[in-house]
Length: 237
Image (tube, rainbow, N blue to C red; front, side, top):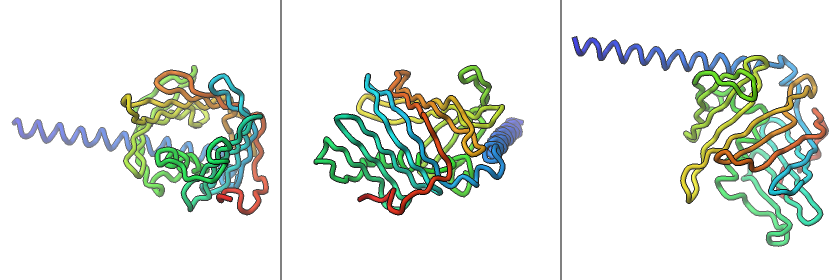
C-alpha cells in the first residue's frame, strides 16, 4: 500500500510539473503573438532618453538591431560611456574616465547580462530554440495589473522570473539574482508606460531596484522603429 501511495504521489507531482510547463508555454506563445506580424516586421530600434542615477541625469541613445545587436551611448558634460555588442564578438565598453576612453572587454558578469539584454525579442519569443525553459508559477498583481508569473531557466542554468500582463501579454517585471561579497542580491526591473512603436507596445519607463532600493530610472523620450543602422555601429572601434 505504501509503495502504491508513493507511486501515486510521484505521478501526481509529475502531472503538476507537466501542467505548469504547458501553461508556461502557452503564456510564452501569447507573448510572442501579441503584435502579430508587426513584431517580426520591426528590424531595428533607436531610442533617446534620460537615465536618473545617483542624483544625476544622464542622457542616452540606444540602438538595437535583429537578432541580437545592441549599442548604448551615455553622455554628460563630464563623461561619456559607450557599450556595444555585435552579436558575435565579446561585448565591449569605453569610459572616458578610464584609460582615456580606450576600448575594454566588459567584466564577465556584465557581459553576460548585456548579451541577454541584446536579444531583440527577449527570452520568451522562440524560447525553446534559445534553450530556455519556462514554467507557470502563479499570478500576481504588478502596479495594479494582473500578471502571470513565469519561472525561467537560461541556457547557463540561471534562474529568473518574468511577469507577463494578462491583458496585453507584455513583460511588466523581471527578477534576477546576483551574488556579491555581501551575499545574494535581488534585482527587480519594472517595465512601464507602454506606447505603440510601429504597432508594437514598447516600455518608455524602466525602473530597477537592488534589494528593494531604487538604483536607476530610464525614461525614453523618443523611440523609432526600422531606422537605418550604419555598418560598424555595434563593433568595437
